[in-house]
Length: 158
Image: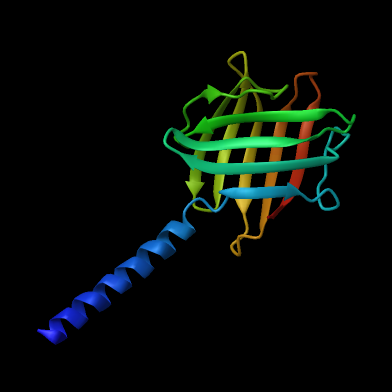
């Protein structure tokens, strides 16, 4: 009886540890990230003076929010909620998009298609390093001003 109880307890502990490690591996971009302006390149400029991105799990999907100061010194706020299934969702506060269509590639990356008035403007690819400390977002397309965009933004996990 005692041996069975010990085996059950050990199996339960192993299951909890395994489930925890699987949960930690999922969606490595969850959490808070700060733009590393020294490592980032924006074309066209100017680059944001500061930018903090957050992703959090909600009942409706993953909520993404960005807060910062643009190159002209003006406050920026934007966000959306997605299930990473490629479906269009409203994107508020982004001058280059009114919709976002994010699709998960794997636990460390996803692609996000930005659209304005139904037309694709920018494709953003988000990649989190294997150690989970650095995130790189590459944005390619055309902004609302008709300018070609090629940004590589590097973020540090907070």
